[in-house]
Image 1 (tube, rainbow, N blue to C red):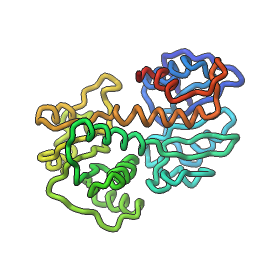
Image 2 (image 1 turned 90 degrees about the horizontal axis):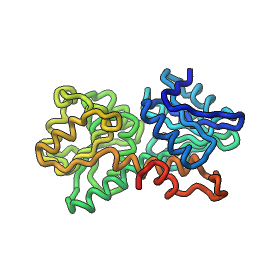
Image 3 (image 1 turned 180 degrees about the horizontal axis):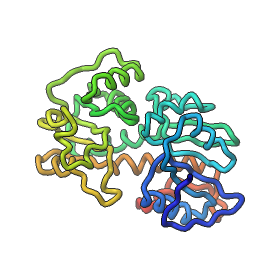
Image 4 (image 1 turned 135 degrees about the vertical axis):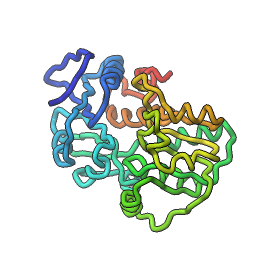
Amino acid sequence: MIEQKRFPILVNPNTRFIFSTSGSASSIERHNRAMERLGLNLVYTTFSFDISPEECAGLLRSPLAGGGVITGKNGLKTRIIPQLDWVEPLAEKTQCVNTVVNRCGRLYGYNTDYIGLKTALGNAIKKTGVCIDTAVVYGYGGVSGVAYRVLEDMGFRASIVGRNPVKLAEKKKELGIKTLPSEKVYDLVVDATPVSSDPNFLEQAEGLQELLKETKMVFCHNMPEKDGKLNYLKQHCEANNMYFVEGKEMYVPQLVRQYSLFFEGLKGPDGKFISENDIRRAWEFE
């Protein structure tokens, strides 16, 4: 049931696959065009069905697999951790693996969202000169734990909120958080949900409107723009003079780090190892 749409791919007995647990047709094409530019015998593909952590690890351990992109579906970023042979300390700390690399049948787990978000927020703060003391993550999905650790490590008084107290309590327990500060106003709001795709997001996302009233900066993890859709949270921020940080600002450094891990030890047709600059050019980031 592997799904490959639109973009024709030539495979041979030596082809290896990067599997993703979700992804649009545009993502499939974007990644495969980039790997084609690099001259690599790798194919990026997605599957549309739900998969258990055990099944996912089994697939990624296959000789055909070079690695996997783990998305937030059904808490898989956390649930896959016990199935891996090694997990980097950062991924352990955040309880979130979004990148799995198959090295000779052993599975290595990493988190590249952390470096992506920290880079995005650091660049935005440097660019604007905005002073951030307090910050809050809205939502408790896979990326929320990473976001909380980023905010904490950047020296902000960080918190996590959401509309479901049970799920919030579960996230706190998962991250080993005993208490969270409660502020009337947060300087920075990190939206870790998909609500920005909904024109009625303020009605759907209970509590988000209050957070947005007096904040200085908003980061949106969701990227409906990738598929030509509107980002309604972005529209709201622009209409109310709030500085908006797009998910792309996190996506680019995250992807460069992720594919550096997938391509570790690989050489292009010129016999040289694939560099981060090569990745940026292949994905047309520069």
